[in-house]
Image 1 (cartoon, rainbow, N blue to C red):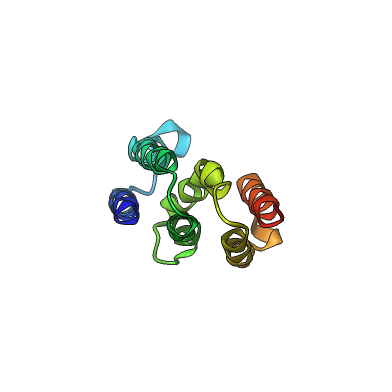
Image 2: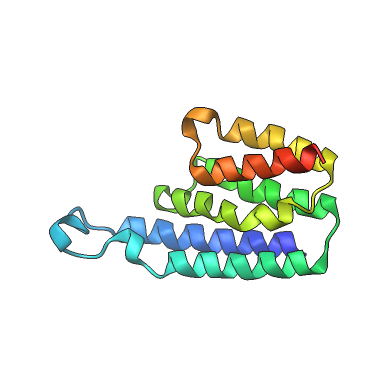
Length: 143
């Protein structure tokens, strides 16, 4: 199932970032010394793998219920306090990859997901990507 594949991508990514954070030295990234966590290719791999899975899902024209389950997972995962801190921003950034799928939701599923999303991301903590997702969910809910 697609949700299991997406979970596996997230788990692998979280594991890689946690390992990198654990191996990090105090001076890494300071004054150009050492290796910056953000430069590791695992971030790019995570985005590419997730994008491939989401594009494949969108092409299959899945039910609104399947889309809602996938999006609920993607939207809630960065809020999990057990996520490595270096993984949270990229996990938020990939919300931009979900807009096409969100447009395929039923109005009822969009309304439910919008209510959850606004709880996960209150106004004071929203990035531009969150605002884009909210606008998309509002548009679908009202269609």
